[in-house]
Amino acid sequence: MAPFEDVKHSVQTNAALIDDAWCEFLLEHQVRVGVSIDGPEDMNTHRLTLAGRPGFRVIMRGMERLRRHGIPFSAIAVVSNPDPDRASRFYGFFADLGVTTLGVNVEEEEGVNLGAKDADPVQAAEFWTALADAWRRTRWYGCARCSGSSTSPGLSWAVTPRTRCRPSLLGTRCPPSPTTAA
Image (cartoon, rainbow, N blue to C red; front, side, top):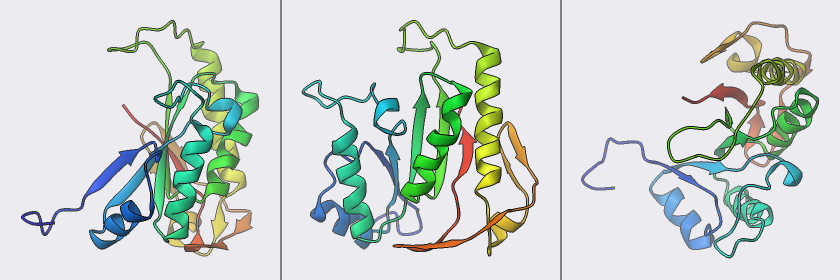
């Protein structure tokens, strides 16, 4: 996109307005896409439409359009309840979506987000440990990212993969590496 010919463009979206025309634009201009979704439907209750209704199905519809057009996408998730017992299902949801990268934020009170966010630090640490365990269980052979070690901010991984890379609509996919965002 002129005048930024050598710039890589990215967009973060809730995917609610993603339609075929947007997909064509994203492909034509090689725009990278990130989708904001907080996990499976029961974990995604804080994301609402402008009408105040749950946004999960609208977000999923937008991601399906991205997939149908062959557009890879990453995800950012806000974890409101860092229950370690939910970490594996949370991670599996994103692995099944085929996201390229998973950014994870445990919700906290800061800036304009003034709601009561009393995440227990011990529970949050246990959630991160359970999330890392889920990631270790689903790493695949077959690519440099899966077969080597990977480092994310605050999390370090160096384990032996137990399963294999798998094909998807977008080619061979590796599981998303969980990352943290500041």
